[in-house]
Length: 444
Image 1 (cartoon, rainbow, N blue to C red):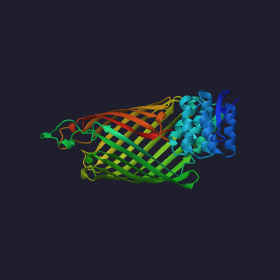
Image 2 (cartoon, rainbow, N blue to C red):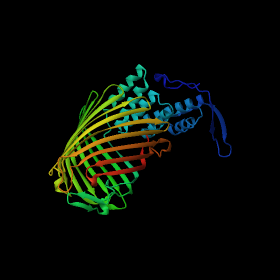
Image 3 (tube, helix red, strand yellow):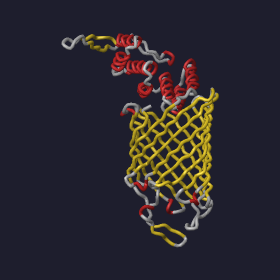
Image 4 (tube, rainbow, N blue to C red):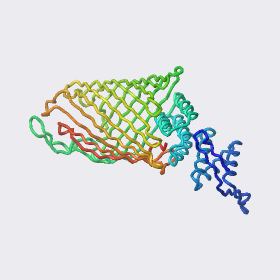
């Protein structure tokens, strides 16, 4: 009999399946020995105990292909624990835990181990999301102690890390421009150059970020982050490249996390400098109960516009978000934001605000995320050329699917569809846009 190791979660299974283990004594005369599942588990456990991890992994993976779901689950859990604790292959361990949850989303102990792997890999947001999902699934009292332990363990953050995303991005309106070939002004209609009209294209979307964390004292770190993104098209006049670096202290106490950051960023559009920004941000995050958390962000920056000095401005941002796990497989959140741009010319000064909601659902070995958003914008004054002051209502929606069943190593394909509609009192800012992304993202 095979006794499973999920006793603390109320998960237990006894397997009597028979499995065949082939031991090759020689090339000429292979010997075939039939072992029960219990014997194979014992063989793998003994191999792990004597540090013969190759043999243990081979046997665990063979058991993980059994037709019996409970036996597969047990094998994958033992394999994941060995990969994590003995071999330090955290990404591979996370994949095994993720596979278990695709079939059995309510196994809290496995979700806790997945959260631990994500924390070690530096994806603290995903780790906290899994902890909230574990709470939503329901946990015995003794397992809740592990939740508190892992929550505190998130404070022991990874000192060095980063991420990268690569995707193809077909877009019906890469420059977010009007489809009209004329522009109404106070002195009559202007004929728009083709470059000022909506253009479609397929871009290469590259995004990456890296960070280093230096301990200052218990509960305080110096966090230095560098990030970059590039949206590249065959028509290089529409290339959009951004690079930035920020540094500042991060404090953690209780369930609170407070982060300060300051630094410059640069943007190039169409292979030419577009803007330079210097500014700072502050972010505060705190859990609100076992299943949810709240986050507040604020920032101040000075942006120098290289193309039009009248658009050089001081920018102020403030946002608040709330995230909650509804069940082990389902969650969502709400964000509200405000933005103020005080430019040299009142016609370019504006205020905007809006809200967005998202929902996610795990469906087998795929995760579906839907988002809806609305924003309103108003300029301080009318620009001389236009007949009206700029006033806009912007609507957007997206649907993203991560296909973990088609993973490549530690990554899985991502498909995202985006729709955007901007209604503006100024014709040149009135546009529609449909875009997609086909790329890879983390598989856990």
